[in-house]
Image (spheres, rainbow, N blue to C red):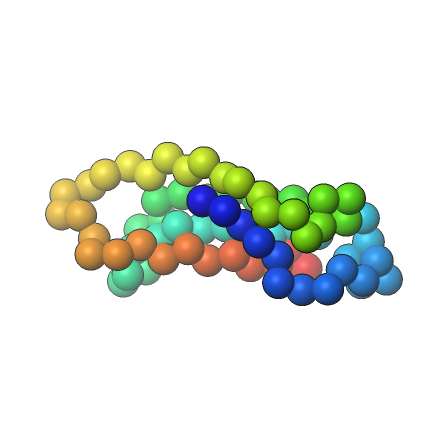
Length: 73
């Protein structure tokens, strides 16, 4: 998975790093398959961040997965 930030970095608001929570869940929000804390830094902004996720498979498989990324602040 590639993660790209779509905001302008303002040190006044973001400081040197900005934290985000990433969730992978099913379409009905019944199960969270993966959660991870992601830290974007000013030094690497706006480079693409590559993430590798391992998702468990449960029967029946959901028709789709949703990825949510929410700021920690």
